[in-house]
Structures are given as structure tokens and as C-alpha cells.
Length: 284
Image (cartoon, rainbow, N blue to C red; front, side):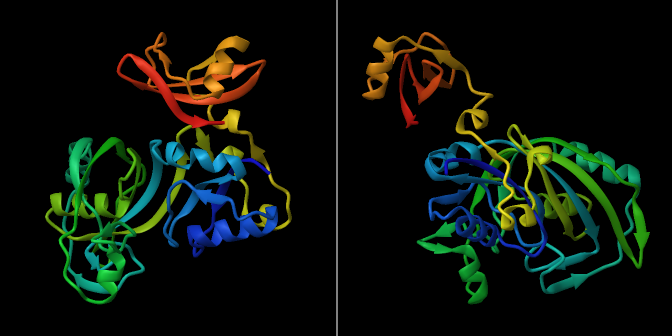
């Protein structure tokens, strides 16, 4: 079996749990996901099966859309509501302050990677340092917050302030860290109390499968071509197809970052721009 499986991940499942379930049902270990969702999170998890695992890196790089709930007035070690509480404080911020702060976060900025993450430093995952109570300098990544808005009323309850946001972000953005930074700009502390991923690239929840669908082998599988439908596609001659099947670099006539080549209506390869030439990115 080869293709792309869009899963609506439920809460309390790890991304690896979902991969293991899919692997068992479809009968292959050649299964990979394209962007981790924490157990607290729900929503789109894009799974590649068989030869589609060649696309994991490409699909991981796509922008993502999330709906998240923020609770101001709490600080935890994991930056979400499931962690150990480190501090609590009374919050007094206005709706106007919240909206202006959200607007100010749109754009590029250097985001600190949370210590409870799988990013590696000196060959070890950051969460291993955290679990061993070892100090480590957390790396920063340049991320882009493309869209960010409040989508709920602001609730003031038990000295806490709770509201929901919708955001579209670049690859590598941690919503937990974004919420930490929003809280800091509001001169307070805060955590992510809920998270749902609603889009990844061209994929949305309309084409998703539930865990029950998968366990019952009632799977809606997308083809590799469907997964690449947003990429510039060219139907080529048999002569050029022969060259491309052999990985020959060709002159760039298309001025696109990626070009998908088809011959006789069959996809052959994905080529990547490199200066004024195109070279093999993935053979399909």
C-alpha cells in the first residue's frame, strides 16, 4: 500500500501510537508521520505509507493552522496544562491588550525551542535533559507567524484569563512556545490548555480518518499525486522522461522551486531548482 493517510488524532495518543496502529493495519513498517502532535493535541496528523514515505520531509515543511486555548496565570515545566505547575499568579489584562499583543506577534521572530521536545543537542533529545534535571542552552529558530487572531470571548475566572486563538505558522513553530511569548508580552505567565491542528499544507479535516476508521480498515487513502497537487506539474515526452528516470539534471525553463514531471499521465520524479538548473529531489 502506498499513499497519504490524513488522521484526526484524538487526545492522549502520541504520534508514534498512531503510526504503530496504521503500520499494524496496513501490514508494513514503512510508515511515517510528517509533524509531531503532543498527546494533549488533536487534529491533523499526516501519515505517509510505502513509497509515499519519500515525501515525509517535503510534507513536514508545509505551513500549519492551529486552534489553541490559552490560560493566563499558570506556568508549567512543559508549557502546557499537563505539566507540573511551577507558578501561579493573578492576571489583570484587558481584551484590548490581548488583541494588540496578538497582532504584534505576526511576522518573523526567533523562537526558543521548549525543553520538552525531541530536538537534539549534542546527540541527545531535549526532553532527556529535562527528565534528568540537567541544564542545557535551548536553541532558537526563526519562525513565521503568518496569521494570528482571537476567536473566542475572553473569560475571567479564578484569577485566570482564558481565550482561544487561531493561527497559521511556518514549519518548526511550537505553539506552546508561541503562547509563552504571548504571555510574556502581556507581562504575565501562561500555558497552552488545548490544541487542535486544523490544516497542514493542502490537507484539512475534511479528508481525515478517525482512529476507529483505521482500526476497522475503513481507510480513505490519498494518492501520492493527490498529495502533490499544489506543485507545478509538467507532462513530458518519452525522450525527456528517459533522461529524468536516470536522474539527469536539466535546464530550468519553469522558474519554480519544485517541478513534478509526468509521462503518459504517470508521475515520475520531483525536481528541485538549483540556480539555473533542476536536479532530482525525489524519484517517484
